[in-house]
Image 1 (cartoon, rainbow, N blue to C red):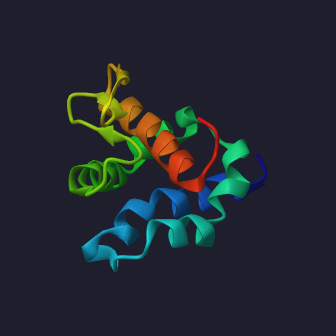
Image 2: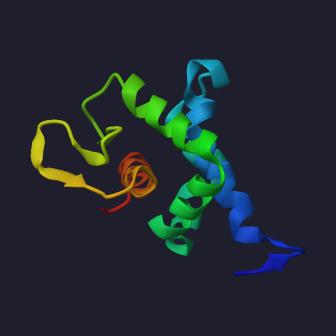
Length: 124
């Protein structure tokens, strides 16, 4: 991971990806999810980060965690994934996909990666 000062360059584009939940919300402008994925270069960057790195940024920026919980709660489609505040993630109509995590940060991190991979057409 390249460093510039004390901020990893990976964190810069990963933060842009993590802001997608806010940007696609009504309060953030209502950008289309696929447009946000393209703008941030999600598919290109995806091989370079893990859910653990996402979790660390969520822990450092609690508003991002809340943005993703709100995104999941506001979804109007059965496609993709969901996350619940009790740490469960899954896919609607696919009970075998359900998983529970000990911390909400881990659950949301796993949700983000799976949800964005799904909509970017990446294998999960």
